[in-house]
Length: 286
Length: 286
Figure 1 (cartoon, one colour):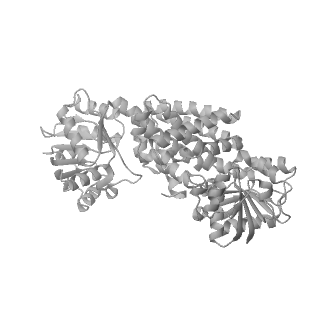
Figure 2 (cartoon, rainbow over the protein chains, first blue to last red):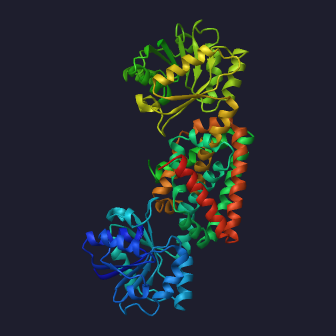
C-alpha cells in the first residue's frame, strides 16, 4: 500500500500506473511532476493525479514511492533534481526501457547507487503516447523486469514488486546487463529493423506506389515504426552496445539467407523458414 | 459472368475466389482440381466447388475461365498438363505472388505465351492456408495486379478484371518486372526479415527466455514469420533477383543506422526514425 505516489513524467506509462493503482485501491494520493504544466493539468482533469508541481524536488516531498517515467535522456537531470529531497522512507524506481544507462545516470547524479533505488522496466506500451492514452489495464498480465543492484535494499525491491503486482503485472528480476541483452533482441532490434525498412522504402523514387500495394502483413510488420522517434533515439543511444552486436549478428544471418537465394538453395531456405515458423508458433502463438 | 470456372489448387486463395463469385452470382459452376482428393472432397462438402477431377487436363474441359492457384514451384507442371486441353473461348489466369517466373513457366510449357493467358496476383491472404480457411470476403477492397504481356488479348484481360471486381477487389495493371520489384519491397523483403529475425533469436542459447519477454510489438512484427514456409521458399526462388537487390540495399541502410548508433549521432537517428514514422503514418495509418 502506497500513501503518496509521486510520478515524474505523467505520460502513457506513468499515467497508466496511477490509474491502475487507484483502481486497485493501492495508493492514497498521486502527485505528478513534469516540464509541461498544461499536460499535468490535463492529468488532474482526467483524474489520473491529484495535484502536481513542475519542480521535481518539491513534487517528491513526503512521497513514499517515486516513479521516474521520463525519456532515457532525461533520467540523469531528474535524479539530480530529486537528490537530497526524497523522504527517508521513500523508494525510488524508474520505467526506462534500457537499464545500464539508467544505472550510470543514477551513479552520476547520486554519487553512489542509493540503497532505495530499484531500477525497473514495465514491458508494455502502445504506439500512442501521452496521459490521454493512459488506461488502467495497460499492465494486466504484462511483464515487469526489476534490475536491483548489489546496493539495493531487498525491502525496497519488495515494495516496487508489490506495486507492479497490484497493477496486474508479472514481475521478474535479473541483472541490468541481462535485461539489456534480452530487450535488445526482442524489442530494440525489431524496432530498428522496422524503422530502417520503412525509411528505406520511403526513399525509393516511386514510394507512394510502393506503399499503395502494401498488404496487411506489411501493416503489422511496420506498426512499431509508428512509435515515438525521440523515445527510440534515446533507447538506441542508451543501449547502443547490445543493439550493435545484434545488428551485426542479424546482417550475418541475412547474408546467409541471401546466399541461399542466390544459389537457389531450396533446402536451406525451407529450413530457415520452417525453424522460424515453428519457434514463433510455439512461443508467441497467433 | 462465368459459365464454368475451373480452379486448379483449391486452397485459401482459390477457395475464397470461388466463394466470392458464387456469393456475387457471377459464376454458374465451379470445378476444382488438385493433387489431393481428400482436400477436394472437403471443398465440395464446404460448398466451395461443385465437383472435382484430380487430372487438370480433364478438369479444364469446357471451362471458360481457369484460375491456377498452386504454389509457384508447381505452375509449370500445371501449365504443361492443361496445354492443348483448354476450351477455345477459355481465359487462363493465375494467382502467383511473383510474375516473372510464372511467365517463364508459361513460355516453357506452352512454347509461346498464349493470347488468352493473363498473369495475375491478388494481394490478399492470411497466415492460414487451405480451403477450410477460405472465405468470400477475402478480396473485398484488396488489390489485384494483372500483368498482361504483349501477347495477351485485351478482351481476356477485361474478363479477368471483371472476375476480380465481382469478388470485390480493386484491379490494376503493370508489367511483370514492375510487379516483382514492388512486391519484393512491400512483401518479400519484410517476410525475409521477419523469418530471419525469428530464426536468429531461436538459435540463441536462452531463446525460451528471449521469447518470454517479447511484447505486443514483437508479436505484430513477426506475425508474417508464421506464414507457410514452402510458399515463401518458392517466392524467394521465383523472385530472387529483386529480393537480393533489396536485401543489399537494406543491409546498407542498416549499416548506416548502426554507424549512427556507434558514434552517438543523435540527429541522424532522430531523422531516420522521424522519416519512417511520418511515411508510415501518412501511407499506412494505424
